[in-house]
Length: 70
Image 1 (cartoon, rainbow, N blue to C red):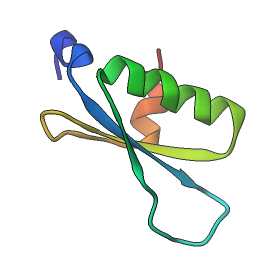
Image 2 (cartoon, helix red, strand yellow; image 1 turned 30 degrees about the horizontal axis):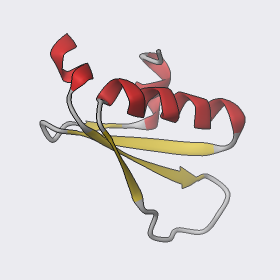
Image 3 (tube, rainbow, N blue to C red; image 1 turned 45 degrees about the vertical axis):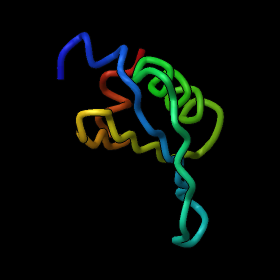
Image 4 (spheres, rainbow, N blue to C red; image 1 turned 180 degrees about the vertical axis):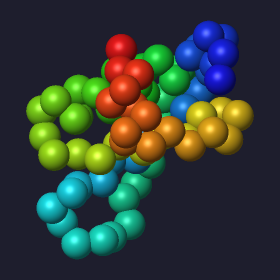
């Protein structure tokens, strides 16, 4: 991943760590930077487990997002 990837589209899916497994809809963001900001806010305000898929196809797990939060 490079710094230019922060300006490319990404999809964020928020999973709950309390609810049983189900299908969660993804939310498309115009930039990875915006998706990361929304993911970290969801982690801070709730018990969300965010997963991000970048435009290049990289999958960012909740542990990666927590480590590299903006």
